[in-house]
Length: 227
Ligand SMILES: NC(=O)c1ccc[n+]([C@@H]2O[C@H](COP(=O)([O-])OP(=O)(O)OC[C@H]3O[C@@H](n4cnc5c(N)ncnc54)[C@H](OP(=O)(O)O)[C@@H]3O)[C@@H](O)[C@H]2O)c1
Image (cartoon, rainbow, N blue to C red; front, side):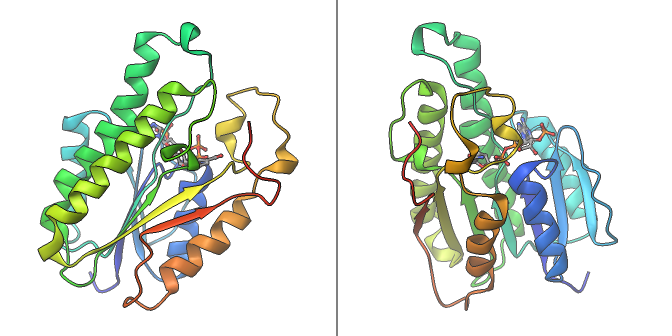
């Protein structure tokens, strides 16, 4: 395979779908992973079944990638879930689902990734959230899982120092994606970034010279935090 290869988790919807389209336009071959799959059709797009919270599913995902390439140049750690409810109305099961998807999922993704890293080249972009370093009310499970994901990445950065790969952690505020359709909250979409706003930042980061690193990029609507 000649072109640069990218993995995008959560490619079936929202940001992952937009990211996949943009990377294809930039000439990447994209391995998109999700449970439900996507309508995206492109000769360089591989729609691969993936449940990021299940070890065997992540193994199978990488087996599929391995059939095409041994090198991954860009990884977009994006798949995630979010539910809103006061702590006392959040079941232990929902809390656990957030941890298995948003924290264990990236752990499994990175475990499988190490064999595909390209020294001095692989760029690992994680779509965290302002909720990875800022507490919001009524999203304790989401907050905990994203704080946890950040801890995982910060440890890995040091562990993988000799691989000389780049980590970029994104901390976006609210973005008007299908994630919010399921939440049915009071928040106005006018105070959220649009997916194209997010993509303006994302594309800039991907296209910037590889000598630059962006350890933490926080960006949100000019109206401020949603709460
Ligand atoms: N929208 C926002 O306001 C906002 C703000 C900050 C950060 N973020 C973060 O951005 C990321 C993308 O969110 P979005 O707004 O694009 O939400 P979205 O439209 O709901 O998309 C979520 C994606 O994650 C995938 N996913 C969920 N569970 C999965 C699992 N177990 N295995 C594999 N894929 C799974 C979904 O695919 P399937 O259901 O097909 O598996 C879907 O493709 C998330 O990590 C979210 O926390 C979003």
